[in-house]
Amino acid sequence: MRYLILICFLFSFFTALSQRNPRGIEVNWKTDTTNVSLDLEEIFVCLAKDEIPAIDQPTYYNVPAAEAEYFEFEPLIFVENGLKAKGYPLSVLLYHEIVNDSIVGEDSTLYYSVTYCPLCNSAIVFNRQHKVNGETVLLDFGVSGMLRNSDMVMYDRQTESWWQQLTGEGLAGEMNGQKLDFITAPVISIEEFALFFPDGQVLSKNNGLVNKDGTQKNYDTNPYQGYDSDDTPFLFDGKIDERLPPMERVVDIIIHGQHKIYPNTALFEEKVINDKFEGEHITLFSTHKIISVLDSTEIKKSRTVGGVAAYYSDLDGKTLTFTAKEEGLFTDDQTKSVWNVKGQCIQGKLKGNRLRMIVHGNHFAFAMLAFYPNCQIFGLD
Image (cartoon, rainbow, N blue to C red):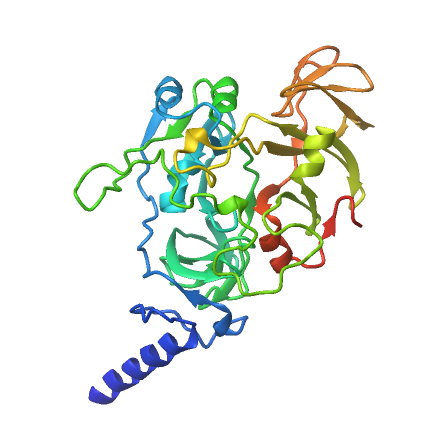
């Protein structure tokens, strides 16, 4: 027995030495770190496991209550399942980074994890029903306290495997080499969510996080004041790709497994971009009704950064092209019908139709280019 104890101690000891851990944070993982797809020195330990607490039993406001609690132009990431929708304000995700949740739809239940890494501004939703060797496993995720390229390393509680948040790839442990499926989940404002989903639910501010004195955490404040105005990403020691400013917000679209990014500055100038990628006709709509959660200490005083939604622009075998009409509204050049940023036609010949959304994410350029250095860049390639 004492030899077994010694072996376990040595395994834990050498595991602790594998990652960069300058603060000497106690490491206690069951992860098999001999089954890895990277050099473990790429991983930086900055907090203890679960020091940032994921939300596993989320509570919600209805839309009127959410409009009273949140600033109207705050960003949230939303998930739909049939006629049901839930929104997750980034101001709450700043302090939790992961919400494990589900939506019961008319025909099925969607199980997913909403994730947000403030250092990379990456808001991504994953399907947590994951197939392994033909069997479906329901995973739930926690915050490991580790970073790679400044991006959160998640872990699943079932196997304690480590996962890269921005890519959804398993890095170490039993799930090494696996890849999570992305769920289409764009970022819009509280105001837009209320307009599109009047019967929706919005993550509440009452999800168990309190200050040391026992008072409720103030989710209206930003602990990363001025971060997105800095040219130096926090805890990033890789080479900055000079093709774009490191903190430029970009939209990453994924078609047939390939990535292309669109800088927000280009989108704000054009308001609409009609493009073709991987043989598919696409359209990107921009909206200015979103503020940053990484700017001012008081979030509602932060500057406007806007948002983007990406769609396939083929409808019933015909390709549509679009022009901006006014804030949040667009017209197709073929029929002059009016569309909103959610891809719904609300007026004209095509009223009632809806564009199919492309899987896409919103990130800082430095992070996207660190993980996908060969991706195409709109305006440069």
